[in-house]
Length: 223
Image (cartoon, rainbow, N blue to C red):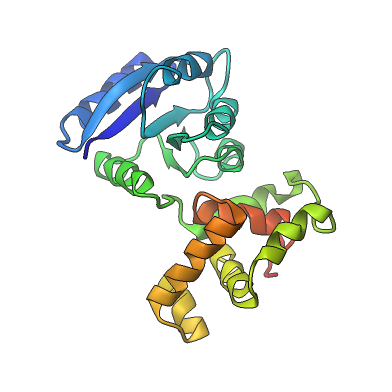
């Protein structure tokens, strides 16, 4: 199955470089390109895309707002944010907007390809621990929703699922969670899948973001 990729960046040279790397892969095809967020939305309306590589600093419409609009669509493609700095506000905002991860622009080609395949298969490509560091840094920007009725979403979870969600939000892998709770890794994976379904979340990164927003986990500490 060929992964259909769209490149969104205002630097033509950078798009050309990425395109050459992707074109050499038997399982990938660059089906569209755009130089800004507005053009990206227009192209997506007429083109089937699986994964979008999205720059953040662009004219007309930046990558964060474009990501939010793309992710709000039914059957939206997965979005990978391209950023210059590992822990910056753009990466944080991109994850909040619905991106499945972020990559540095100078990422080695092999890592970029692995990230695209990972996102396409439904996984997040930012380690929850990295997301947690991001959120610790930018948590003051989050709305204080800990006491708001919207947190009724978490009531959909069983006690065990809530326990698993807390550990995911703390950056633990399935294997680490399994060891902590004395469960099989397959059971933990099932719990994570149910959490994503019940809370209507895309991936583990979104679980971490929601855990912070709802006060389940607090900046710099545990829940």
